[in-house]
Image 1 (cartoon, rainbow, N blue to C red):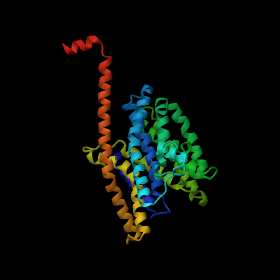
Image 2: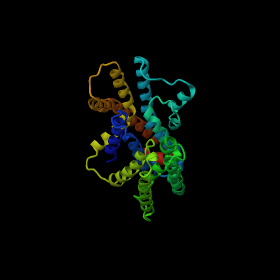
Image 3: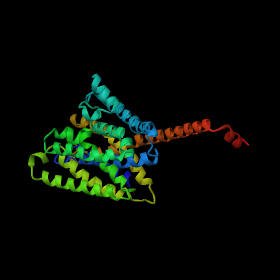
Image 4: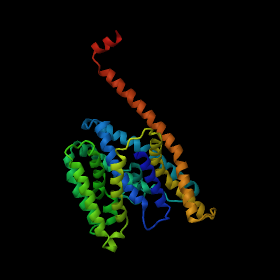
Length: 341
């Protein structure tokens, strides 16, 4: 049921960017849950689809690249095309901005982002770089967990920049990914170590949230409160939905496939309606406009989802044929002769 959850989170990101609820940024909470899902799902994937084998690390990186980059690149083309055609929005053509936007990797440390919500992809890509090592050598995962949480805590109490270190940069958010990974470990951890760690982290987060409630200034810092709520919500969702079994997964799979296109394409949708609003072409209330923007974001994601789905199917077919050719090339003459006979 994680596909339906991802869809809800993507819509929460869209809703938050409409600006209707400035006092609570639902998108920030959703991003934290997205990070936890990434840790959970990719830990499972590396173990099952890549045999938890470091010799498959390049294949894992290649798979992540083709899952993330083609649709992301298309979103840049769409947004850039809109900016150029109507003169709305801003293109960042300096070398560093172009490098950041085209490579994804440094987006969480860069400010001039063509597709602004995509900064979180920078954090995810950085985590995916580490993930095979964290899964294969779990001691590093458990060592990094408290270190990363300490950075996050310092940020929420304003000892260091709260927005950068408590929300965007990987050192302060790595523990969120790791918590998702540890929840995945609970599936097979017969020693109950993972259960104890998850319980401890949730307890610490709850105490952290309670402590912040006594300090008006830290709790008002951007995204501190939302991040902590996201940790609690994400933990509950993964514990309940991660093990849920559906008889018919078609709707869940469909919603899951729509989540990434919605996340990437909604900026172009919001730009379009902002452009119309500035020129007085829209006569809608704020709530009416939000309803239209949410609906159009879903509709606009459908062709992108279909295009990406077709691309992924084709990619898998090419991979299967490539593996079959390699296996055939490495077969011994005796086996080949036996098959022919």
